[in-house]
Length: 321
Image (cartoon, rainbow, N blue to C red; front, top):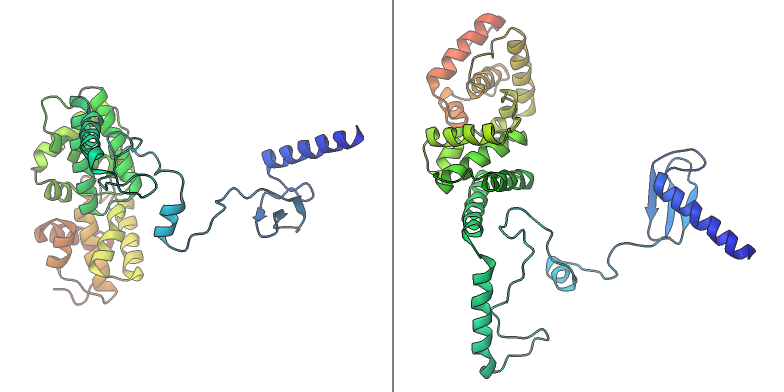
């Protein structure tokens, strides 16, 4: 009886430690699981809080991606970028069974029919077909713009909401997909200009903007306006400029916003002009044409914003052309 009570106390202590995840001696939350010794150790005082902990990882080792795929017993995680969320199965086209043996010739016709009906049942109705076409176009545009995974997932979620509220009827799939991608970029603070979206989608900016305004209003998307600082890191990377130029550009834009020079101006134009000024001041000059091509604005816009910033902030540029 005493041994059982002691075991119950130990189990309760383990549960409370796992729930709170604090060191009982110094109350530190920096705990490390040392799987080589199967111990839970406090990083601050070195106290061994728990011993013989269970390793939750796989019991096998893999030295490359091919071995990892062969030994893994689970599928890929659920994703909204596939119309069936990646939860369906696919009958492979290799005429082999689960053990690697070749399937007899008399059974191959039956297997072919199974494959055909399996592909038909994956897309059962018009909504599934619409999602399949739209999400494939969304993935293509995202790859062309080199967008991260979270932006793709967000865009897929917005498109699914638009389909549920029947906002796609009477509009082209490409136009709605481009508008959804533009909204996802703004929501995830990964701004892309309408020019970039329209060039990838091969559509006019006017149609994309119309669909974007309709979707954001009907779905009540809370999107903050973009600021010039959001574009600086990407523009500097494309122009191969140093971090000094980037820091100087941020400083110029901060002073310009304090004097309300950025209000009522396009963010890309302000970012391009400030970047051009910073490149001249830091002796890493880039021409106005190079900056304009990267920012997607005209050279006239850069010159106008350039004059406003230089005159109002009192920046002295000795040699500028």
